[in-house]
Length: 225
Image 1 (cartoon, helix red, strand yellow):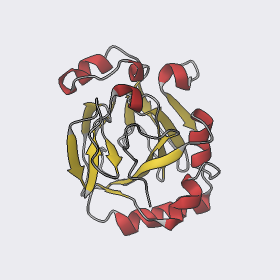
Image 2 (cartoon, helix red, strand yellow; image 1 turned 135 degrees about the vertical axis):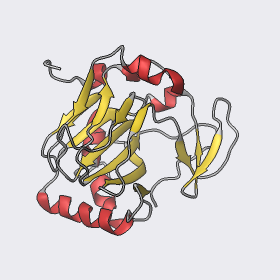
Image 3 (cartoon, one colour; image 1 turned 90 degrees about the vertical axis):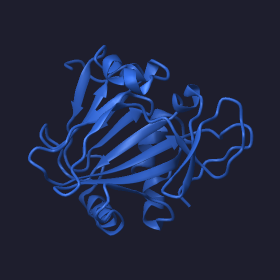
Image 4 (cartoon, helix red, strand yellow; image 1 turned 180 degrees about the horizontal axis):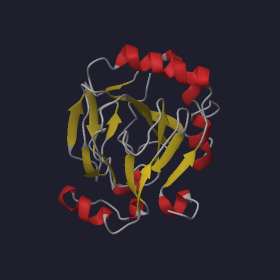
């Protein structure tokens, strides 16, 4: 992709060197503490993240630039690929949200529970208003399992899982390479995938979903508290 990325058009943008070295080390320590042998861990109640993820914080300010100053984190997951946890992810959209309690609202469903959190699949227009940030705590070159993103696919609407690879192939695909401290931003429903690292090595990423709006009908975000 030779032309500069435009977030509205492409659904992706890179913020190079967004995090200071000290912040990276703090987040690496959190990854070591919380993830362990699992491929990833959802983060809740971590005071260490509060300032970073708030709209005025280093990470939250990027989400605010792409949405509005009302942006707030609604989900945070720390991923840690290692030689012992070196997974691949097929082309897909992120399609469910963590909510505080079950409230039946037209267009929302099905429901599921993951990591003891209640999730629901919302109408596509909810996902289309969100932004996802991936905070890189290790270098990601072409061999270290970069996220692959199909540019512009965030405007396709809901894509059936069985059609995801074919629909992604209709769009320019980029490997989202990164240096330590870089942050990639994505429109939350963009089609994306990831291969295994070859050779296997460490790749720690903090992924945070942001929204600048409340959910309808009495539904509430689970949040990070």
